[in-house]
Length: 397
Ligand code: ACO
Image (tube, rainbow, N blue to C red; front, side):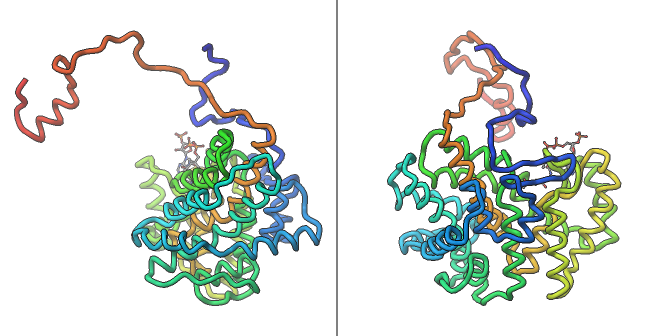
């Protein structure tokens, strides 16, 4: 096969699909969902309304939203067999791995695959949006040795999640800020996890496999896992005075500073701007976080050193500080990201099904051609020989 275009590592700038779900302008720091600016949604919408907008393409009417919220409210519970399965997970396991396993397991329980049936699509959307927060909260309680808490039907989506997680009804401002955080993380064009969801969707497998593959991809430290790493990094820096030497040493060692840089944004991520404001609102009501001053100084020094390369805070930089103030443990930051991004993944799943063609890119082959098969007794591997020699001493031929 002839290669139609140049190879771009990481597919940078290569369009993988046509989509009407979200729009990003990385030079001017613009993000829109279905044409509506993220700032406006953060101010005026709530997460489920935004999820509806992303998945069905339009803001719901009052009745449509009521029905959607109502359906989600009554599908929040987990089957006891899923809870039993979770009891067998090791407490030391990462919550993202637990979530990926649980999302995939839903396919065992709801296995009918009818991708051309709108009722099936709707049920899958409702089930995934409803149950993923319950899974995250249940794993958190179970790993502490407690029974999971049942969802409360009288609480809204975000308040209910915080209640299931912390065993306390949350302060309304905390629930509102958490909900706004979900809006901000819900969708972001063809990032790694969304692409992963689309590739999986293109095989016409079930939606639970689609979401499970996306969860696995989001977990990586170069993607959603960065928010957890940011808090670890702030912890390691420890004080405002240590910021500059930390950055200088990172740059000298060519290591990445977590929470900075983005393939698309060459200015400060618009979501980071809003998350920083949310963090400040939380600090005003519930007291300041020591790490905040370190974070602000870090942003200043990184901008000074790397601003010319377009390296600015991304969405993961301030989200951890918001979640920390809400009492969420740092290894749940990425699962919380997943709770929100399920909306975007589902929107892309649905869009992919509308005009599906299986993803099957090509490659540029760099290996041997026409090599001969060498019998095993005649093979020599310099690397293996050296390794073995260190393990067992002199090698006999
Ligand atoms: N710290 C220091 N230098 C950086 C950083 C960073 N965080 N990010 C990019 N750079 C530098 C690179 O070293 C490189 O420099 P060079 O051209 O002199 O070699 C240049 O900027 C380009 O960086 P790439 O890694 O090639 O950019 P890419 O688009 O492939 O990667 C990514 C983007 C993965 C987000 C990168 O910026 C990164 O690793 N950041 C840290 C991890 C992170 O915060 N990830 C979350 C991203 S948001 C999300 O996924 C939800």
